[in-house]
Amino acid sequence: MPQSSPQSLLAYNVATLSKVWVWPGTGKPHKPWDDEPENDAFLKTSRRVSEAFRRELDRRGVQARDKEIEIVLGAVGDDQIAVQAIERGVEDGPETAEISVSRNFHRLDPYTRAFFVADALQAITRRLGEVHGWDLARIDEAMDAVRLNDYAYVFESDWLPNAEGSHSARLVARLLDDGWGRVRFEISPTTGSGIVTTAEVVAGNERSDFRRMAKSLSWSGSSTLVAKGLGRGFAVATDTGDIRSLVAPRVPLVNSATVDNAMPLPRIRVDDPPPISFSMGGGPVNKVPKKYVGELDEIFAHLCFAPEWVEWWLGLGVADVELEYDFEGKKQKSRVRLTADRITCTIVRPAKSVAHGLLGKAMAHADVAVLLDAVQAATGRTSHPPLPMESEPQ
Image (cartoon, rainbow, N blue to C red; front, side):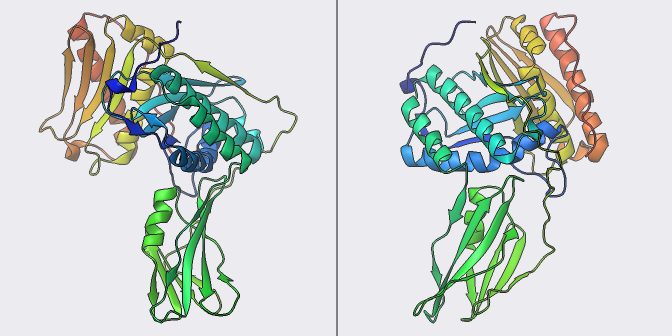
């Protein structure tokens, strides 16, 4: 497939690229973030690599169409990590891409996993940069800086003095390979020497989490530091550094797979985007059960990225495919709008009608099946590729 030619940034709203991340960016500490162990390991390792890359991109000011590249994980592949950028036309919203993680990726050691996560994020960013005329040298410089720092991400807040001016304190956080932050507090006397450092506590998955917690820092008198935010609460004694959690501590799930140092290392393969643009999403989702929305997102991603589905959409003769959900409608229905070069497929369902838990996941599959029936009726197609199986309960 021929590569796309670079497009001038003047054709779009110019933004500064910052966030290159893998969805979802968080999960429950004591459970996998994905059913596949390879994807689960990739997701969690990507947290520290993505945040480190974000910091370095911010320092270099790479001009792009949007500040964000959102990446989803496809089915686990063979011995290659396949990355593919998805062309989205000129609409607003984040750039999108897919990664197919290599088989047994979770059996690599943490440093090697971070190495290949970084390579994959860089490959996606460069591919989009080649298409849209971004500054590739700055992208490479940013990831080179991440590598020089051993893929580590550390956040340090500003120092906060108490009212008496006798002590100052700050928050320091680092992201580990389980995808979670380890937060500690440092207390320094204004005169004299010796910084008191607390033990680390589990909190947060990204820079914005740590910023919110740092913003919540306050002093209770001159001897107690209080931190809130993220549903967490901590009280720190100035003199001893003893830390008291105001809620039950989190215990992240540890990757229990045995590291296989003799395993062949994966390779990065960059696939060109198909000659068709996809977009997906909708809302508002704040009052919609998460199981339903999460399953719907996974199905839509499959319909956008799976080769057999790409070919099926191409057969419609359109350049843009939009898959949407709308939870503000008064009754459930499927809506299909077809123009000369675009098809918009929308699931309309009142938020209050969405089922919870496993019933919600089953409902998502049923709603997509009805939507595709409507697409076939509108386009005259008589069959479509099989839908993905319902994901296993977590």
